[in-house]
Amino acid sequence: DSKNHYLTERLPDAEGIPALYLTWREHLRSLGKLKMNAESFVLDVGCSNGQFLNFMEIRYKIHGVGVDISIQALTAASKRNPRQHFLLHSAERKFPFGDASFDYITCLDVIEHIEKPDGTIRELYRILKPGGKILFHIPVSDNGGSMDWFCRKYMPKLWKQKIEAAGHNYEVILTRKGYEAALSEAGFEILFSHRYNSFLQCIFDHHMMHRILNRAFYVWGLPFSFYHRLVAPLIEAAFSLDRVLQWIDIGGSIYIGVTKPPLKHFQV
Image 1 (spheres, rainbow, N blue to C red):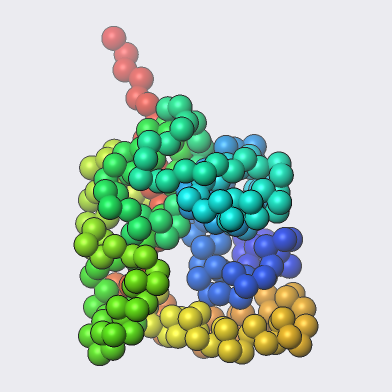
Image 2 (image 1 turned 90 degrees about the horizontal axis):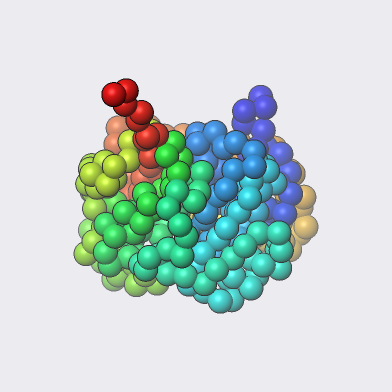
């Protein structure tokens, strides 16, 4: 199935630790819903080492710009792909781009680190072209029944350590409906919204992956193509219960795709 080929192919220069995560594969699935056009201009907010932006260039033939607050990450990103542009910038400040600069924006695991996310959302609206699209991945506060809820309720010390290590600001993290309302209020139209980080997937990504798959693919040297074509589909089938939990609105995070409505032309 060519539509899902990006999940099973040997990802050029996108292999490595992120490719082993179920969350990385979910990033790619959600990205596919944006239906990117070739030669589009794309901004990746919180680009880290540029791996996700590099995948977008390889897969969709886009022109990429990445911003991040880490000099070390940006240095690695520039070495990974010198054709793309990388800037040291905090998403809490005004972006150094003109109005309507980008066709697509990805903002994965960034909003929860910002003290005043409303300002960042307005800035993203400003720099997005009419008809452009944005993909967000954001933790949510209404996480009842999820692994986050379980840890917060029954393992508060571990939960506190996890949140502090991740740098999440739960004082500003909203509910799913809260983020949908905030994005709509800023002028966006919601294209899709679905839960993630439900339960079993969290155990796999944060524990099993490090103990089992790192050894198999980095110590034993098994080829990544073996993982993408056989191991990962079996793992996803094993964690199909998480899909049921997401369907009944249980999860610690959400993916939201939005668009900036095109300008309307009125006849006089």
